Structure formats: C-alpha cells, structure tokens
Length: 222
Image 1 (cartoon, rainbow, N blue to C red):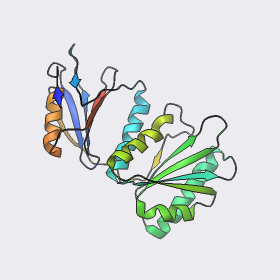
Image 2: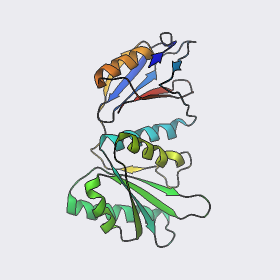
Image 3: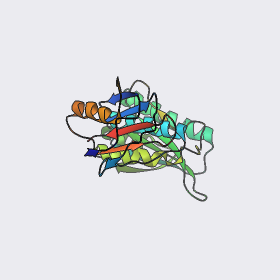
Image 4: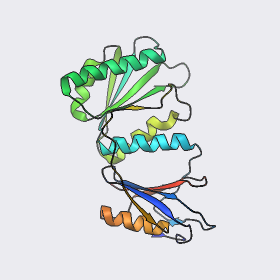
C-alpha cells in the first residue's frame, strides 16, 4: 500500500480493536491537507453520524465475538414493535436458561414494499440450532458467516436501514461482550496506519473515511 499526502492533517486520537481486527482514528484538529491513497486503501464517505456510529458498533461487536451465524426470524402474522421485542427477549431468555450467557446481536428489519417486520439474530455457530428450536413465533432461516470479511459484510448489510430504524433502537446486543480498545495519539494518517500495522503484523486490506468535519478513519485487517 502506498500512501500519499498524509502528514498535514493535524492530531488524531486512535483506537485499536484487536479482537475486531480494525483500528480507527478521529481528528482532534484539522488542516487544509487531504488524504490520498494509491490502490488500497479505498476511501468512501458517510453522511449520517449516528447511523455510522451504530454501524461501527455492530460490526466490531460481531467480529470481536465471532458471531458466525445469522438466524433470520420471521413471524406468522405482522407483529407490533412491542411483540417483536417481547418475542426476541423470550427466545433469548429460554436459550440462556439452557446455554448460559452468550454474545448475541439482533437487528429488526422491514423489507421493501409491504414486507413484514422480521429480525436478524447474530450469534456463535454452536448456538444457531438452539435459536431455531427456541423461535416459536414463526419460521427461521440460517446463514453461515465464516471469516471476518463475511461477518463485516453482514454487519454492514444489517446497518443499511439504520438511517430509518423500524424500532426505537437500531440494534440490541448482549451486555458484557463489548470489544476492548487500546488508545493512542498520532500526528498524521500515515503514522496511524504504521502504528496499527505494526500491532497487527501487516498492512490493512482497506481503509474508510467519513466526509464531515471531525469524521473518523477506519482501517481493516484480516
């Protein structure tokens, strides 16, 4: 990876998420310089800060806990918001009484047109069978998410509706499993990538940058 004009953007507060295989840098000060890259990393933008933060949290939680199975839970009839949350809560409570405490994350979704409200539940592969057994409100569909790239893509897919959430909360997750981060500060994007790469032992496969003032930069590793 070749980095271009990276030394004139001010100070950055950085976080390494070791279990999630990614790192982020947030601008503390900003100059007129710009960040360019040849080949990888690629740069994209985000225009909704709250939705972007939620997407990042979902992605990091998913990869840090190796949530390698997605169980889509559908209902026999159209549920209300309260019925959706109650059905998911009851299913997870039944599972915990059998399997103990475990990491999970679920996102409500309504498809295009007149599609019914349904949910996507991410959890460890070993618990996918139990989730399907304990879902008694309708039907389920199982999808495997083997590998960190598949898990990131799935997390981004689930976040596609975060700008217009169908319930009061965009997502629901188990407490006590948040990924741990290590903080540091640098004076350029190049230094951020170098420090993070030294930690992971290789260069990132991709980088992502927001387009608003104070927007963050995220780099991904396998």
